[in-house]
Length: 286
Ligand SMILES: Cc1cc2nc3c(=O)[nH]c(=O)nc-3n(C[C@H](O)[C@H](O)[C@H](O)COP(=O)(O)OP(=O)(O)OC[C@H]3O[C@@H](n4cnc5c(N)ncnc54)[C@H](O)[C@@H]3O)c2cc1C
Image 1 (cartoon, rainbow, N blue to C red):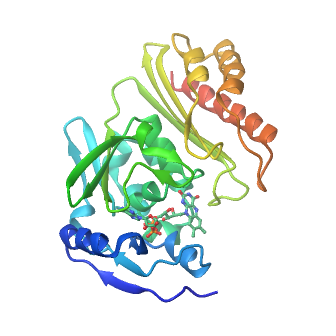
Image 2 (cartoon, protein in one colour; image 1 turned 90 degrees about the vertical axis):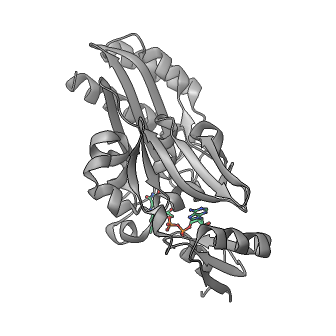
C-alpha cells in the first residue's frame, strides 16, 4: 500500500513548528526519523493531512551534561547514542539498551525523541527512562514543561505530551558511584521488538543492594515498575535467596497480556528469567 496524500512542511525553527501545529490542529503529525511514522502512513494506520518535518532543527541534536543530568536532544539518533562515549560513561543503562533497538539501518535514522513520543509498550527507551527516573522535556507555544517519566507514560501509545507540543529532549540522571545497570530482553530474532524486556538500575551500599528500580517492558500497555520484586532485593546481597524472594514478588507485580508473540504465563516466566540474569550479573560485578 502507499500513503494517502499529505502536505509536507520542513520547519526552520521550533516557533514555526508551533505555528503549524496550532494552525493545523489534529490533522498534522510531527516527522522525525520517520522509522515508525512512514510504515504507519504506508499501511494507512495514520492518515495525517500534513507532516511537519523537524529534522532540520539542529538545536535538538545535542548530547550535553546539565548539572547532575545528561541532556539528550529529541533528534539524537539511536546510532549517535550507540557511538557516544559520554552516554556510555554517564548513562550506562541507556548505552546497554541501544543495540537492542531495531537494526542498523533503522538506528541510523530513528531518534530517541521519536521513540519516547510514540511510547510503544515494547520499546526499550521508555523502560530505561522509567528505571532511571528521567525527565521528559516538552515545549509548546505556551512554553516548556518538564514531566517525570513515571507521569509521562499513560497508556498504549499515550503520553502526557499534548498534541500541540513537541518533545524537545530528555534528561537522564548521571549514574552515581555504586550504581549498577543491567539491560536485557528476549525477542524472537535480534532486532525484533521484545517479547519481554527489563531495564534494571540498582544502587549498592558495599555488597548490599540499597535501592533497586526494575522497569519491565512489553508486559503491559506501558513500561511497568516491579516494585514488589525491587523491595525484595533491597537491603540484601544479590544472592540466590534474594533472587527467589524477588521472583516470588514479581508474580504479583506483573499481569502480562497474551498476544501473537507469546501468552501471559510464558511472559511472566520470561520476566523471572530476566530477573535472574540481572541478579547474576550484579553478583558477578559485586
Ligand atoms: C522493522 C522495525 C523494527 C523496529 N524495532 C524497534 C525496536 O526493537 N525497539 C524500538 O524501540 N523501536 C523499534 N523500531 C522503531 C524505531 O525505533 C523508531 O526509530 C522510533 O520508534 C521512532 O523514531 P523516529 O525518529 O523514526 O520517529 P517518527 O517515525 O518520525 O515518529 C514516530 C511518532 O512520534 C512522533 N514524534 C516524533 N518525534 C517527535 C517529537 N520530537 N515530538 C513529538 N512527537 C514526535 C511522530 O509524530 C510519530 O507519531 C522499529 C522500527 C522498524 C521499522
